[in-house]
Length: 488
Image 1: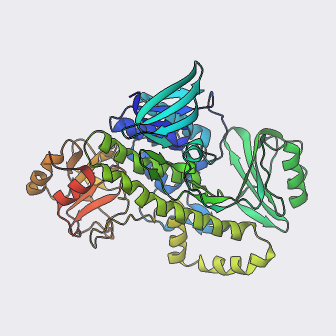
Image 2: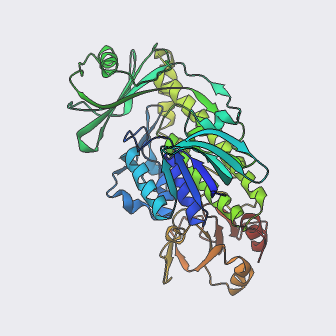
Image 3: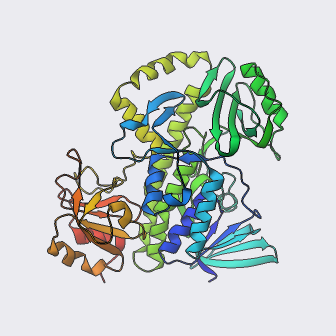
């Protein structure tokens, strides 16, 4: 074997997965056909859930000073994300190029083997491995690994080569995206609906301004090269009446509203993650964030199975948990597209939803949906409100090594949080100490915390609660075996 896992694609999903696999002690090769990072930034900023994930891996300081905000939107309708108690604020204006740089540096420091100028030509799945034919700087070669993960984007070679079913709807329009210098425009952070379409304006670091332009009636095109800046400037002038043709384009691109999702995230020894598995209108900045979260869900599971610490059926839970998340992502981005990009016939619906969003419960619902904080995996485990949900940051008192549950997850291992110093709990978890860490410390909780009467929680490496006491039907060893394999 050349590696235990081959990852195809060095974007945010691929780099995040490579780092997660290295934390699990798995050898990984990342194949990327591009010679270097493009510097382009389709994705921008992080949702609250992605902020938590990066915090759980100790990555947030690598991004430097982060501009955060509780201002968000759903289909262009303002939503107060401050109603999400106990959550990070969303990060604004962090270019995807910075995210890719940070994740590549992190994964390579952990030992990931990143191979650029390596294009996958074919894939052959065998009983005990996957073989990849690759064209690289030194010609064509064949690489073998136990598993292969396609993180190679919306036009995924892996998905197409292996014939994954990718149903959905084709694009009905074309939108322009441009980062430019040399103009000053009124910020339109959540977009502005105009008689002929929609425009969005946001400042980026370094004196760059991001523009998104959607002119209704513009048919989708299959482009081999980016649109000319003149096309973007002309569409802007038709919509707004302003001439911005004098601006200096940094880069220009286009995208549509195609909506598709593969029917299976796993096929034998091959997995798909990120845009390889789902494409959609980039509404609310959810695409890159969902892709990163796909990788965090898959990484620890793949690592546990490869290292012989968990049974192979654990890998099926990747599809079981992430496919419904992808379905919901496609649903809400299609709804946002209808609100944002339709004509005046939709204005009554915008007005009604605008009234509803003023109610805190409705605002909380939309904010949780877009931020990823609503996700609850079906663990069928009991009545505790956090089962299957992500664990909010819990401050810990009196522990010598860690000060919070977030810090306890830095190593990418499971964590048993013992809030009462229960020696019996430690004895029952002892056979799994090669796979989990036990942290005994009193929690510092707000009065309204859902953990107020909880004595212990078992947290998966991805930050989701697998067991809680009281409130789980299964006992601790049963839950440990389900997620971390048989006792040793």
